Amino acid sequence: MSSPEKSGESRKNQRMPGLYRNLISLIALVVIFTSLICIAFLVAIDLLGNREHPYLGIFAYMLFPTILFSASYFSLSGC
Image (cartoon, rainbow, N blue to C red; front, side, top):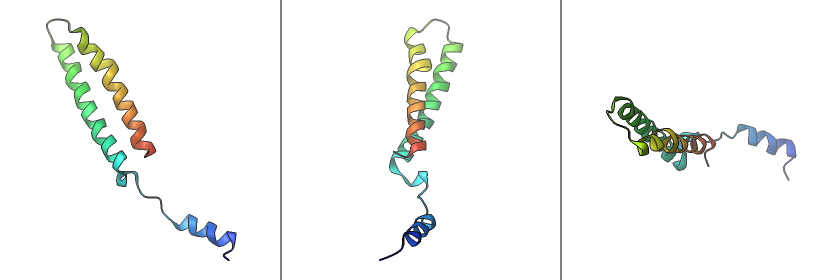
């Protein structure tokens, strides 16, 4: 049988795979970039628009930032 010290050392020598090698993290990164582009586009429309768009604010300031932070969580945690 191997001693506990040996198995502890082998665990230290093993490297954890990077987050970019996880499929969920990669998908989350795509969602993050898409959400950032959508937020920037909708904020520009909101600032440059001539009339009010009530649903535009819901998407630009509530929905897409929520998606952005959720995808950031999944990307960083590697779920």
